[in-house]
Image (tube, rainbow, N blue to C red):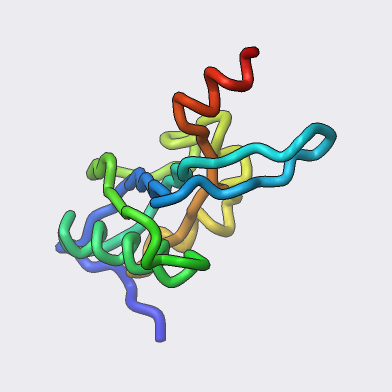
Length: 131
């Protein structure tokens, strides 16, 4: 069932950081494997409050994580997107895949866009890769 936005609901941009308890080996396209310490992911959603938006996104990420018990989930940033009327208002190079169709879903309660996971390495692994 789709919920249409009322005047009390707002659009939010949310950045999530997931840190792994133990680094995970990640395949690399043409090179050797590397260890990821975690990942970042950002979301656009519609909800009635910052807390509800934050919880919606954190629940979404936890449900899709392979081993949530070995992760630390953190909402790194949450921002209210005031007067969001055009897709171009939020278009950035990293949201190039935000289509008009996805943007139109902003008028429904819930997540209407999320980025691909951007994995990162620990400082130790980064220094080791420089040698």
